Amino acid sequence: MAPVKVFGQAMSPNVARVLVFLEEAGADYELVDVDFQAKEHKSPDHLARNPFGQIPAFQDGDLVLFESRAVAKYVARKYKTDEADLLREGDHSEAAMVDVWTEVEAHTYSAALSPIVYECLIFPLMHGKPTDEKVVDESLGKLRKVLEVYEERLSKHRYLAGDFLSFADLNHFPYTFYFMATPHGALFESYPRVKAWWESIMSRPAIQKLSATMTP
Amino acid sequence: ETMAPVKVFGPAMSTNVARVLVCLEEVGAEYEVVDIDFKAMEHKSPEHPFGQIPAFQDGDLLLFESRAIARYVLRKYKKNEVDLLREGDLKEAAMVDVWTEVDAHTYNPAISPIVYECLINPLMRGLPTNQTVVDESLEKLKKVLEVYEARLSKHDYLAGDFVSFADLNHFPYTFYFMATPHAALFDSYPHVKAWWERIMARPAVKKLAAQMVPKKP
Image (cartoon, rainbow over all chains, first blue to last red; front, side, top):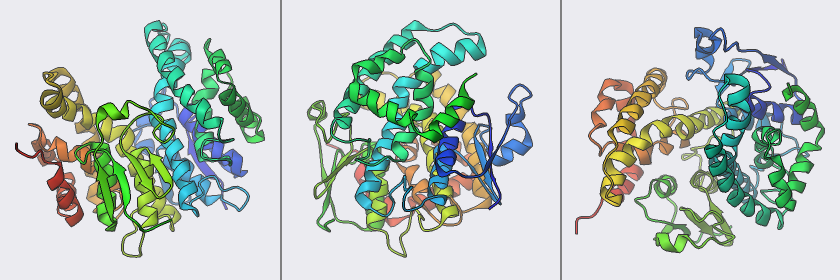
């Protein structure tokens, strides 16, 4: 199998989302930089891979994909083994629980948490924009309510979809990793089961390896 | 798993409930819609931890999040003739997922503000249309439809030459968009318009669409 290609930088949360699954699978891959300063993301070559001009894009032979969660699912399916089955598509009930909490990450968890990452890290460091504390405060309020639900869920099960690590848990990694680098990371201290769940994700060798490439 | 009717909690007119119902109709499943009072949904429970609609029940399996419910339905009732996820084929499944994500993260954020401002806010909330929001959304939507036009010039459907979950996900909000004053926008994108008409011609979609039109008192 020739190495697959991921187009974009490891520090981009949605690129990292794909890299998590490649690292977990121990897959051979090549990371190809996309130079935003040079507007490479709007170049004909990149638009042929991602018609919306975003990162990541992905290539496996003649298959070209975009949308980080779609790419991540492809990776999880392609490299699935009996021991490493992150989607559980062979069991309708388990697969459904994986999908439920994957959707929660996409539509509820990240909606509350990512504005804090943008305001506290991405805008100041990468765009020279000041932090809008009002946005941060509103988001923290929403995030606390979300974390209450997660605390309840994780007091019943070791992981989000059940007592098995899944695609749902690992999807939380990129933005949560950056959240921990903001001044508000200590929020998780108030939610001990959530904190323990996060620490078990962070302790995974694949996550440790990827984290090192995401730190400036 | 039982083949007794499954239950969907929420009104058929709600876009995210309709997302689930269109899949149930496509697979020919027996189901019951249990209309839920929004006030009742404020009471969150372990089964509905975020208090949203739709919620879903199949025996003792309780689910929420419309796209997760829809996927469960499409897997459970999958037949050779009705395979809308294509999970047996790595490449096809990936293309279904790509365009399902595009609906969720790109198409929907462009089209849904127009539905809210032109229909839901005036009719259901007594709020006036914010024309600035509508205009900005129309500009975003045009750019999205340019990409869809290019895609649908190559294939009859979004994931390829087969209808899939990706196409059906576009139904609820697009259906309501067609009831706004901006429906004619699709005329500028002939392949997109033809694709939409193919979706609307499907018996399952027609049946559900009839339930989504407000009944006159």
